[in-house]
Image (cartoon, rainbow, N blue to C red; front, side, top):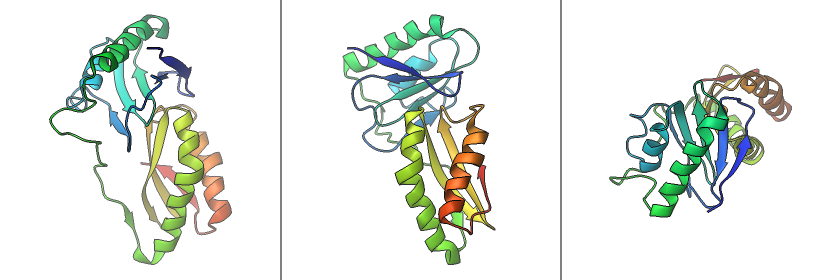
Length: 186
């Protein structure tokens, strides 16, 4: 099994590509070992000293570290990922599936068509680019011209995420939707 690695815009996060589907649909993020307790792979990754978060996408895994150098952490992480896939263990145990967001979406029913367009733009133009950087972004709400988004994986806590939100996503949404004034991370 050959696992590729890619740098992400977040220097504390590295993207691992195992060459197979990790999650057929949805994404999963654990920022603590407790949040990853239903995933044998997340447990293996959190067992590596220095690992502080894991994120599973369609065909990639991102791992975030606190301290330590990648040259020291990477072999242990590669070993954990390889061991998981070689044993054939499930991604989740006890019937647990992809984690759903804690909070419901919020927006005024009068803004339903604007929200529909925001979601379509996120799905077709923004999420693929963000996934390429080892993360994900999801819609949370729209109120008074402000779009609220949740950034996950490599994008969560990334030094360039503010620039991505302000100059990339905000400008794109404003271009198509004059009702959008601002974009904020939740």
